[in-house]
Image 1: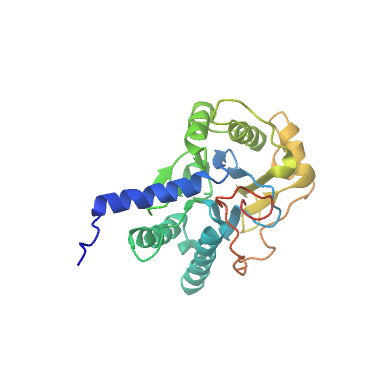
Image 2 (image 1 turned 120 degrees about the vertical axis):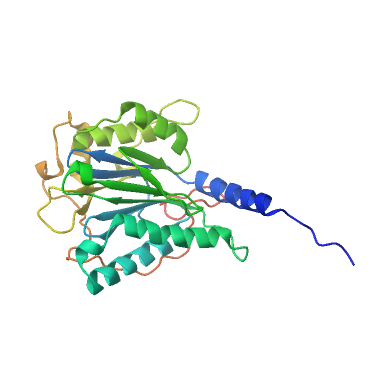
Length: 278
């Protein structure tokens, strides 16, 4: 009778963490920045249908890097949690901190379970406050830990280099145009130090705008307004341009959607414009 192959728990956890990190690193990076009137989400995404950024609830946004089918599952679960809690108690009881705790429990359970592989995802949950000091940004790595971020955060393939770039240049009170340009500059930097150009049509941009009169603060910035912001000198806000915006979903409560087919952000065979990378 052969002796069973033994792997120490520490080594098993290290192997699972390395597996998840490699999967996340194959995806494109994204950044989340605070600016004077809210929080902006910016990422390179050639697909117009598979979104990296989504609305979870009135003041809460969701960003993710990694495998699309896995983080879409988590997003849908977050929408259901928020809707149920807001309906059962009060809309103000739905917070980014509570949602981050739910995601942390889910990711932690999956990561420590030997029955399934760890999720190859890294999440950001952000909530815009009535004033800048009330903004909240939480980063959740693959193992379910929670990191409370301030100012800026990057996740995905080149996150460490991008975070260093943002930490040196991000400041409080930036306009939306300034924050957007800084985010694009950070995403344009390759690991070898060179820079490349990312056209506007390959960018996915969304904001949580505290100045909106609506209860829902999430909206997407697309088309002519995005081009104007990229060309602006720093004094443009989302309301300065016509409403060339794909809004959250149009109503007072987020609409759940059916889970997409398993398009992978981190597919090992390379990225395709409409499937692997969102």
